[in-house]
Image (cartoon, rainbow, N blue to C red; front, side):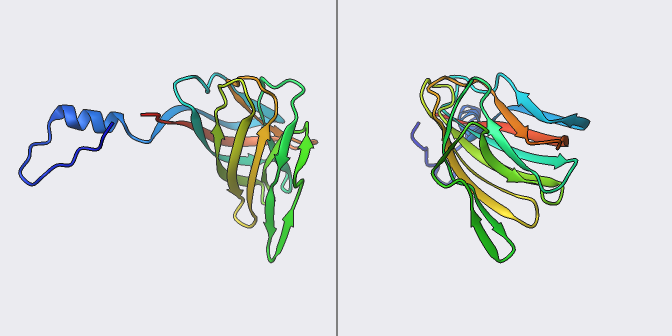
Length: 184
């Protein structure tokens, strides 16, 4: 839709207002909130559809044990390989790059709960199309920021996401909000 330019004294109609409000950039799709739980992994189902090509995911998570990496997985990718996993972590004045150009069945490392919590956001590209799904994003726990990019090499259409912990660690509280990027 072309952007309409209004001039001084011109009336902004209800139709114009509704059109511009309906064509906003990000559209709320789903959210998942929990407290007082102890999940090793949790999955949010039925969030990706053909309505949007790309999605933004924003989260805040709390862990029972600080110092734990956690991962993004796609539940529709049984036996999947997550390629080009390139998390870039900054530890104080030291920079560390992990898993550069690696393949992993564990998932995409997207956060580190060094202080017992982590916040972040990521873009997921074309998850509901039967081809590799791309992911880029960043997270921080107040001390250590990280940046990551990867892809799920499985050429399957995805409908949901899983946040996966390792070892005995548990997610004890959190909120994940998913938005779709409007196409038109």
